[in-house]
Image 1 (cartoon, rainbow, N blue to C red):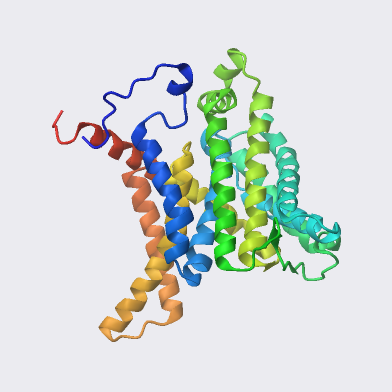
Image 2: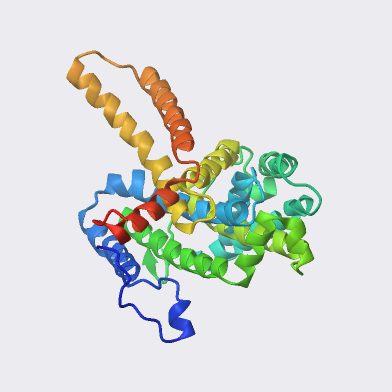
Length: 358
């Protein structure tokens, strides 16, 4: 009843192939953007911006990039943290070494450098796949850790590998306040997510999904596996590199190579698996799950300690959070292995029929 498509006639090919062909979807996206750009800035506190919203936006952007490679093209990658590190340090070098370099241009150039790095470590995908490819991309993680720790040129001759940025501006507006950082990240995420959604709906996206489903059959019908796989690595690495630059410039401000460890790679992969592989919307669901759940668990244990009167130490609460977090991930993957995006799709399908039993 609430999600009926009756009477929504399409009279042209462009109307039938638009990104949101159903009126309810267009209305929902418009309301969501209005909430994000208008309502949230008016109501959220600085703590919410710094601790929840900005990390969620940046992780969502990185998850979109990982989903293109893993979910749409089927190439398992454990080097996402390395691509983030390359994007962050490349953007840093462009920003500090070239006088007057605009922040937005530095972020894009950081993404381009991450794209080239991703293509280089994506070459093994032409010969190996599965766990072998995962190990090959994991090599990118260890190589980037060594490179940014040992080669001091990348860190502007910093012996510890720690660097920092300040006085960030975009089109003459300062990005020092949490609100300005939030709006900048939200605008960039909306733009890149829209481009990614259109890309996976087109011919390139169909080639990626054909390679994912059966690469031999895809090659038989004329799809070039080399072009499809390397283009997926290129697009994915570019988006992840931009997300890494945002993580360093906007969220951290000062960072070192440990900020982009292998834990970051696993976290991004968990976001894609939990949110739903092969779904741009699932990237947002997975990022929300990973970012919000630990904070919610921390508040729960703090409230439990206050109510029960038993003092729960920080170490015990931290270990309990990890245990509950891991158990929830395992339970969720058993109950719904296709991710939160599948639950969203099932919910929309049921709304098409409700309240009728058929």
